[in-house]
Image 1: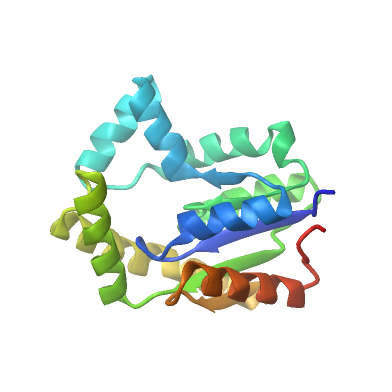
Image 2: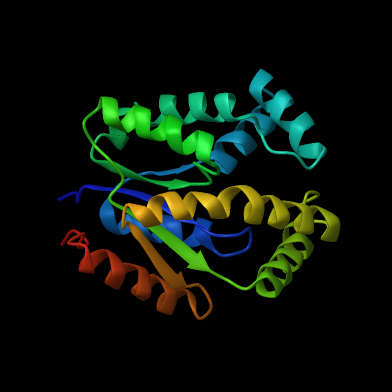
Length: 198
C-alpha cells in the first residue's frame, strides 16, 4: 500500500535533508524529487542542461527560477509521482512557490506539509566541511558554503513565512542521531494524519 503525501523538505545546506528525504520517501512509497540530484546527474551525463548548470554553480550562483521550475514540472508529471512526492531543494524562493502552486492547483492538489529541519549555522558549516573532505566536493569550500547559507537565509527562509501562514510547516530539530530526527519527522506527519503506510 502506498500512502499519499505531497511534501517539501527544507533546511540549510548540511541540515541532512537529503538523507531524511530518502527515509521519508521509502516510508511513504513516494519519490524524492531533488533538484540537486537532477542537476548533478545532468552534469555527470554531459547534457546541455548539465553544461549550463555547471557554469552557473561554478560561480556559486543558483540555477534560474524558470529553468528549475520547468525541470521540476516535468519530473512531477511522471507516473511515480502521481500519489505524491517529497521535494528537496525546490521551491527555494517566492517565485518558485508561485510556480509550484500553479502546477499543483491545476491538478486540484496542494502540499500536505513542509518539513523544516532546523540546524544552527555552525552545525551546517561543520557538516559540509566534513562532507567536502570525505567526498572531495569542489563546491564545498568555506567561501562557497558561507555564500550558499547566505542565499538560503535571504531567499529560502522567506518561503517558510508563506507556508507558515497556510499552517503546514513542521519545524523539526535537525540535531541528533539520524533515527531520532526521522522519528521526529514521522511524529509530526502523523499528527497531520499522514501516517506511514503499513
